Amino acid sequence: MQRGISFQKGLTYLDRRRRGMSVETYRRHSRTLSYPRGIVLDSDNKVHIPYTDFYLAFGCNLKCKSCSLLNPFRSGIVPKDKLIESFDKWSKRVVPATVALLGGEPFLNPDIAEIAAAAKNAFTQSLIAIITNGVLLPKVPDKILQSLGENGISVYISQHLNTDEFRQTLERGIERLEHYAINYELHDGYSKWAKLLATDTQNAPVPCSSNAEIAYENCFCCKYCTAIHGEHLYRCSLVANMVFAVKEGVLNSGWHRVLKHQPVTLESTPQEILHYLRGGAMAECSICPEKSELTEARQLTGEEVRVIKERIREEKRKAA
Image (tube, rainbow, N blue to C red; front, side, top):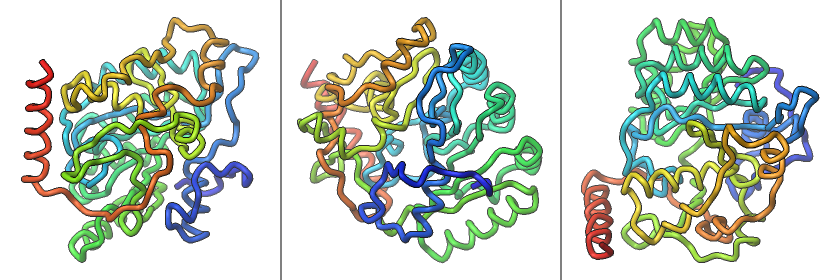
């Protein structure tokens, strides 16, 4: 993404070979999501954290198999006012090295320019990055890209498709980013797909019954990927998404154990936030595989998504 960002070489939170990355690709990826400052409490009682997610949308224009955020089965955007309020409140409590604005597909949120500008104004010491699949970039209104460029917002593109049509779409999108002087990074998200959640033979997400300690040791999300939803800060973005997916009815009752997780809130003290984020394995780690695997990168068909949704609804009706 933005050139000149340093990263700590010894802090490797992803195994390059497991991800199937070349040394150069892994170097760029590490720089993008690096954690130069660690988790510390400063003299102003603000907790410095390496990274945090804010979700602009839960729906997505792609239907990726084994999506760790369950976007093929979710919908909707997060209101601008709710996000801006969250930025203002949490910027008084935490200082992320990187603030990631993502989804779903964040460019589905029509207020993305105002949201990104508000994040920049609130988190003045942070790198603000939009995480996108890049498909919509050729169609994004000029005024939005102009605003992103003027506010120094970076764009991180995870390329989930490798067709001729998509490559042409991506080239047009990148040309527009360059026109508006927007820093960007392109990541190969199609040749090797890391499966972070278990699925059954019909590609429906199912919880594991893993040894929490082993799952934690082989996971980077619980160690480094925090997520903020409203007044709650979760130390694991996957757990955060599972909690909300259960509440939305996207997952069946087998996932209800994640609802026991207690994130920190705006009412938590700086010391409580620090202790929570520095914690080791937690019970909810058992929902994830003990060791993630590489899977084929492909899109679910509309019929596959429909069948999975219907099955989840049926399981919920039986459980009730």
